[in-house]
Image 1: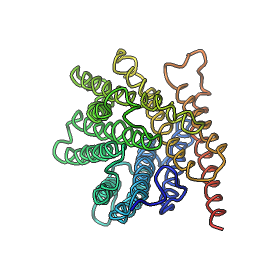
Image 2 (image 1 turned 90 degrees about the horizontal axis):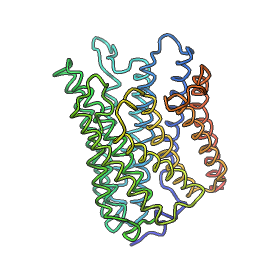
Image 3 (image 1 turned 45 degrees about the vertical axis):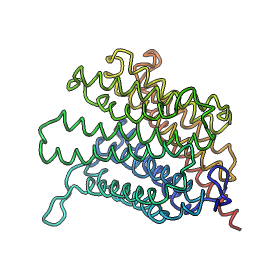
Image 4 (image 1 turned 90 degrees about the vertical axis):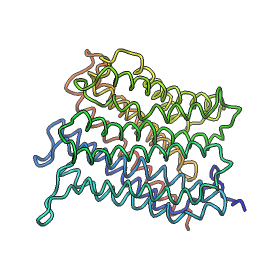
Length: 417
C-alpha cells in the first residue's frame, strides 16, 4: 500500500536527529579546515601538524557528511514509498548512526596522530585506521538494510543510480582495505601505496558522490526517458567505469608513467561525459530553473567541464598545480554536494530561502579564494593577502551553514508546537 508522504513532496522526515548529527560533523570538519588555513599563516599550536589537520578535516567530511546525509536521503526515499520500505529501516538507521559515531571517534586520533599508532597500555594501535575500518563496516550494514527494502524502489527511475552509487562505495572501500594490506606486505612500494590510496579517493569522489548526487537530481526532477539525449544506462556506465580509473591523477608526477596517465585521461573523459549527459537531461527537463536547485546543477556542470578539460589539456597544466585539484574537489564536495543536500532539506522545511542563499554566497566566496591560490589567477592580482583570504573563505561557509542550521531547528520547534 502506497504511503501518503512520498519522497518528492512530503515535509515529514523520519529520524531527523540523523541529519542534524551530520550537519554537526560538517561544522566540525569545516572548523578543522579553517584551522588548516590558520596553519598556513603560522597560527597553529606546535603539537599539531598540518598533515594531521588535513587528514582530520577530510576524513570527517567524508565519514560525517558526504556519506551519512546521502544515505539518510536514500533511507527517507525508501521508507516513504511503500510499507515494503520499512523492512530494512532499522539496519539503515543504526548503520548511519554508527558511521557518524566511528567517524567522530576517529577524528581526534587523525588530528593528533594521523595514521601513526597510539600507545594503549603495552600495545601500539593505529586507532584512526581502526575506527575508519568500523566506518566502512557500517557502510556494509546500511547496504544490508537497503537490500532488504530495495523492492520498494523497483519502479523508480533513480534506482539504477542508487545501486551504482552503493556499488562504488563498496569498490572504494576495497581500496582502503588494500592500503592496510600493502602496509603489512609491501610497505616499501610507494607507487602501490599511492595507487591504492587514490583508488579509494577517486572511487569515492568521482563514483559514490557523483552517482548519488545524480540519483537525487533524477528523483527530485522526475527525469524520465523523454529527457535523455541517449540511454541513461550509457551515462551511468561511463561514470561507474571511468571513476575508479582516475586514481592516477592523485599520484605524484615523479611516479606517474605514460600508461597510468593515459588510463586517468580515459577514465576522466568517460566520467565527465557521463556526468554531462546527466546534466543535459536535467537541462532539457527545464526543472532546474529554480533559485535553489540552479546552484548545485550549475556547479556539477562546471565540475564535468573541468574534468573533461583535464582529460585533453597538457598534463603539465594541472599536475604541477595541486591547488587546481583542491579547487576542483571543493566545487564537487563543498559546492555540488553541500548545496544539493541543503536544497533537499530546504524543500521539506519551512525556512526562508534567504538563509540558503547566504550559504550559496559564502561557498562562492570560498571557491573564489581557492581560485586565487591557483596559477590560473593573474599574478598581478596575487600577493601575501591571498593566504588571509583563504582563511576567511574557509570560515564563511561554516558560519552560514550554522546560521541555516539554527533556523532549521527554530522552524522544527515551531512546527512541533
